[in-house]
Image 1: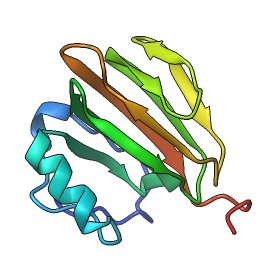
Image 2: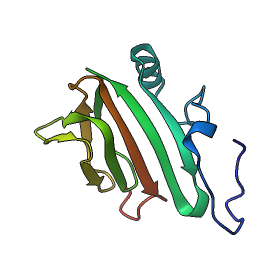
Image 3: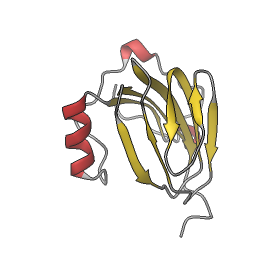
Length: 132
């Protein structure tokens, strides 16, 4: 898929099977997280990348994978498509088709304790005005 001019009008379609899994992660992703994800078999496929102000991705995590505590400068909605996860720091256990909305700067992490792991869809819009 080539970069899309976000000023174009009309709909954009993201056909999952026609979009390759990226070989490199977006700039700003900590290298130690990239290395651990590759080693453990976690990956994400970028879908919308700014078209209409939206960003979305599909992520796959193997059983036992831990996403460390972190936060973002944007609001985000995550839907569990398959499997489940336990949120760290006292959060609930979620399973497909549960979802969560995370407000900008909220710190969270999760563990994929369930077999075979999980597949999620994340969506966000442009950075929140609540970003520091």
